[in-house]
Image (cartoon, rainbow, N blue to C red; front, side, top):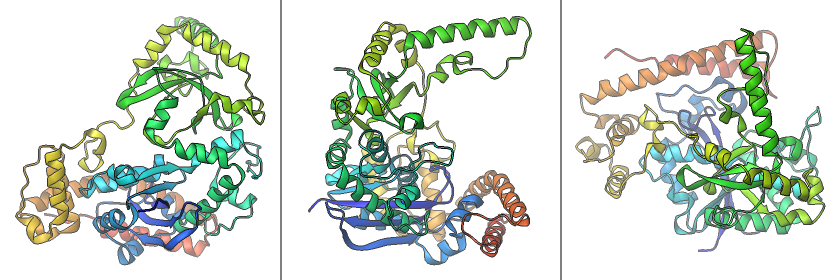
Length: 490
């Protein structure tokens, strides 16, 4: 099959991929020149009866739980649709901040519905890419030909709706998933038109093996790195250097914009000042990063983890030799050379940084959020495929011998949400206990947000372009949804 791109975007019930849910999926397949192939996809996904959405998110998207339930697919139906129709062989699946946001929602949704959470990103010639860091590096190194937005106070911003506006790209209904997809395709064309060499280089570098050839500990060398963790003052881009391995086969890198001797001197001075204050019984005023404890925490993002499988935007340092690259990043060769010597003179600092454990996803008590608590073995993977293939009648009498202790409870939840008639008599109260606990945990924040929105409406304030009547309608629908989910006595 020929290679295609698939641009996609999600609207969700909140910002946490582990506990919130997808409510809208939109996408468009294109050819290598970003011409549309077929019709766009735009579907709603229904919330199950264990989820209260963030009222703030609903005020932005305008999608109510009732609308998603009436017009949308279930999560199970959506996963089946996605794997069969979207994640086809030889597809590069891409978005805007998709690696850190949309892809995480997709992984967790697939996990809850007994699909492999990873194969859609690599198997059968598939891959993923994220245009956000491509935009950041393009803006930092090769901005010519494109208009770049700044905030009212003069700071750089890469918000999609502002880039489209400045470059006369039609983008009505920002924060509607399909509108954002159409806009992203046009921004992608813009970058490839004006900076094809950089665009093609970063596309070829999207895989973790390709990144590993440039950034590694076997042949460490300075490299250019664009990341949202770096300052917008320098267009989110710096020169970094690999210093130590990190969990899951990743790597720690040091920002060579900084001189380690100076940082360590500041840390030592900060320790001394803090000790003096404590000895004198003084309350410390607001302090610089090096005066805080634990000290290691506040070296981030000077020392940060680069994850090979997140399509990082990296490039050889040689790219700075062209188009005034050094000047654009407000760096010099001499500065980088001196800072690298300083870093290499302190192996004890590197060892200290390598010893810090920064888990991306702490273990979860909820099996629906426990995707990253371990990989499934081949035995369980085969059983998961059987779960997906069974209907209510078959699931009622299906008792798989799972090895992974997460899967029995996950199967109970799956049956309750998709085939409630398949639940055994003793499983009904177990599901209701889980559902009640989850709703109780969400309710306090939900009601506080509703109250805040009602206070805003009382002051004649609204959200974005929505009218007061539209906002009032959304609040009413959310309260009705909340009331409909209140647990019964069993």
